[in-house]
Length: 245
Image (tube, rainbow, N blue to C red; front, side, top):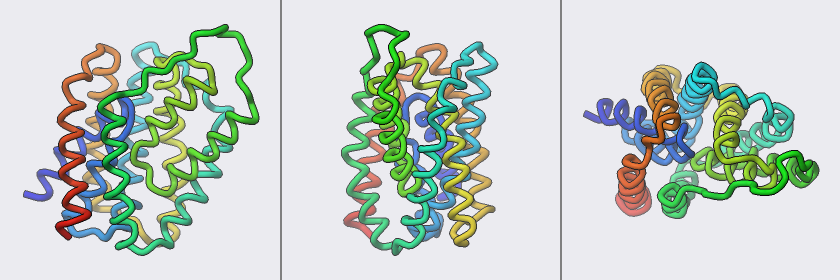
C-alpha cells in the first residue's frame, strides 16, 4: 500500500512542481514511509525532480512556450549554490533533517495555497539588477541543494520581481533551471552514496507523468483544484514527521 501511495503522490507532486512548486513536500515524507532515512529520501527525491522538470520543460516547449533560454544566464549561480547546499545536506543527520523538513512544510504549504501573484509590470526592456539577481539565484541554489521543497515558489518570486519577468515566462524558465540544478545536486548526493536508485526510479516515472499532466494543466489554466488537496496533505505529513515518529 505504501508503494501505491508513493506512486500516486509522485504523480500529484509532479503536477504541483510544474504549476508552481512544493511537490517535494509530499514525496520526501512518502519516501521515508517506504523505509528511506531522511537523508536518503532527500537525495533520492532529486532523481524524480530532475526527470519531472525536464519532462515538463519539454511539454512547455512542444506547446509553443519557448522562453526558457532566457534563464540560462542565471544557471551558473544557481548550480554552484545547489552543489553547496547538497553537500551540506548530505552531511546532516537524518533525524535533524526530518525535524527541519517537518517544520518548514507548514509555511511552504501555505505559500502553495496562496501562489505568488507578483509580476513585473514596468518596462519589459529594462535591464534587471544583475548583481542582486545573481546573488539571489545563488541563495536559492543553496536552498535547492539543501532541501528542494518549495524552491519553485522562491524562483517564481525572484524571477518575477528581481528578474522583471512576467509570471508566465518565469514559470517556464523555473522548470528548466530547476531540472538542471537538481541534476547537479543529484550528482553530489550520488557521490556521497545517499541515492536509492530503484526507489527513485519508480518515483521518477510517477513524477514524469505528473510533470506532463502539470504542463498541460498550466497551459489550460486548470490547476486550481489541486492546491487545497496538496496543502492538507502537507499539513498532515508535517504532523506525522514532527510528532508521530
